Length: 308
Length: 297
Image (tube, rainbow over all chains, first blue to last red; front, side):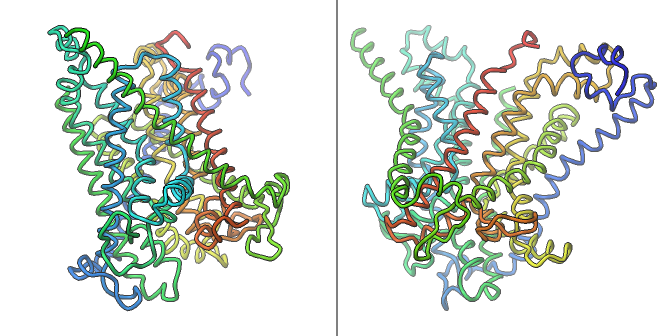
């Protein structure tokens, strides 16, 4: 501890002054700063290192499994050979179904919050609801989907039940992205339109939404990729271990990439034997999800540059 | 004409308000079905036995439905992940918002976003096939799938959450505060530690709580990596079975609307209440200590 008269000079945060010797010259303080900044930089680097490590291992071990056959054939010989086509189709179906549900509802919710609502009590409750919905664990969404869509609504284990469950989960993502997009539309647009005699709805439909469209699309892409990568919500509602046929209706059960990885890696008698297939499936899923994210990120940064 | 337009406008306004409440509707439905399917277990066991019971043998006859080891496992993996993710997440946020040049920040941010986008099953798979065996060899432990491994993997799932929210908080600290501190002769580091971080502290706390909420609810990672033993852990290298893992692993085998099925939904209630509490606390902090200009300092 330093003596308290000196402590009080540094205000209420005196407790952390220990690392800064106030008696020391600028040189020492600079050197301490360099040291700490290196630490901060290191922390940021750890993220890149982790991402790089995961991608490197999945790529180096998965690329051998990838072939035309792997991508276009169903599994054979009780899942120890063949491809993953039904999983790819199932995952695309689930993700697109989820976004078909979540996009209209999400965009409309965001329009209400950003364009109509005054900051009253109702808005506060709606926002609280959305942020809490975003925090619900994915496995709880699975339980909800099982009890509501599969059992009460009688959908059984099906593409439709899984897509609805994933849609409910993606909703906060879409609302967040859309709100950001709506906020970036300058108020002068709205004022000009209203000043010309357009109603509020006409303004939203003809002026605000078209200007926000690219941002909303970015959000939709992120939503699709989020839904495509989730496992827990579809475990009880849509995905099955193995089904030989490609789904022909939305009431069919499906195979899905994330669930396929989980099943191959944890269940069955030939875990070691199917290792290459597991890496291959993981690589396909990563390529799908990160690919969509990269598109969204690049697209968004272009948008932001244009806005400036 | 004007009357009609007005009426249409009103109708559209109400329509949108209706759609905006869908999120709340879903949240209410989630709670309703959790309770409907979960509460019947308390015909078999008391709440006390359920929450404090030390034995989870749901398929035995007679079955034991004590989820205390599962709760402890969830709390431990979350705490362990927090120990790793809080410093890394907050420091990355500080780096991005205060230290890195704009060009570098624009390179690092996508990295954090891509880390957030990695499907949880992939991270679980990575922890299972690579980190597990590595830990086993390095520390000479019998099982690589354990509390430590799960905490480590969860940390990298919550870092992006913590980092992005904390960065927003730091970013919204008014520039005049930075300038005032620097003008008084403080170095950049002193400005960060004594001015910027205290000013953004409520946002940073929100970030940390939401990151922990993400970790406690995460399913696939703990399902694949935590080891799955429903016992109280004796060390951080013991296998554990957190709550989400139990639900995900056992639901397929649980007979429809049998005791086990109800017990799993009841675990869902406990898990839901944990995350709800985390989120409400985070919301309270964000509301109460909202930084508005320099006035609130």
